[in-house]
Image 1 (spheres, rainbow, N blue to C red):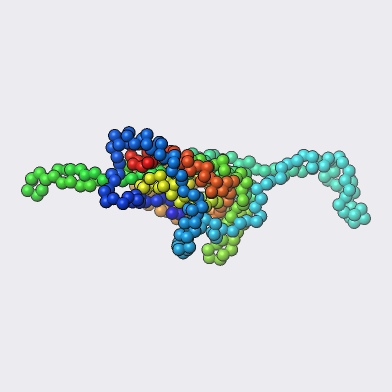
Image 2 (cartoon, helix red, strand yellow):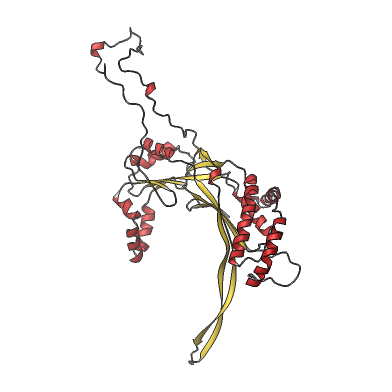
Length: 389
């Protein structure tokens, strides 16, 4: 189990197939016949409702005991080295014309009248309108298929403050869905004919193992993601241990002259994924499914990327150029060079964290019957799931 910030999933867990609790020595086939499924479908619908899913607290206790026994290998999503940027504020003061004084209005001078007051005829700004209020730069951007925000705006590549404000503007809540995938492997024997060194025809049998999908579906939980960001976090430098602020990281990106520079902000949802996946796995196992189960928490709209507005950067991202290099095998030389020349900022050091508005226990009890119903329905439709008694 683990997490990968470079992919579109944040956490994935695969439970391998286990042996069913059977006292007899007879082996159960991996896939029953169509007649067996048809005869047992009515019994499955009647008997499955009487099987209660395991309690979340029991799974939590088992997880606690497991973590105590494997403390050195315990995956933790909260104890990470990221440091929160205290200067981060997601609220930007809006422009209010009422706060701007009238140009013809008389004001009390800031300095004392007897301390160098400027005469009215010597004031060059007398009668002119005041300077405009603070305005936020709205940089153009594009939304990729996976919801990633990407911009090549020239101003963002030259102004650190504008870049920081762009990250705050587009730092909206991510979307997340849980994918449930069950499968088993079947081995068949196939016969092929070959000729030996004497020219005689010889038949050989070889095993062929294929993966058979039992069920696959998604359960969306984006509505439970809090719309308020908890803050931005920066990873300290490994060599010096110094932690930069988000503004300093933006300034470093702006001052970089590399034509392939790139800055990325990754949105992370803080949740107890390990215990939640074990709870759903135990519920599926409790209903008689003992094949492999893979539970993946997939996230979308979880990245903000700013790239340099150069011909080299655009050419590298052009799909036609990529296909040309792939078909001509030039990628063998070009891609390692591009990987070494690309200057990355924030890819593994800049995150924004989000909370869930529902606990893991409540979400489990709310969705466990829906998950088991989908597993049962798709398994019977595929004709490959020998369970749900």
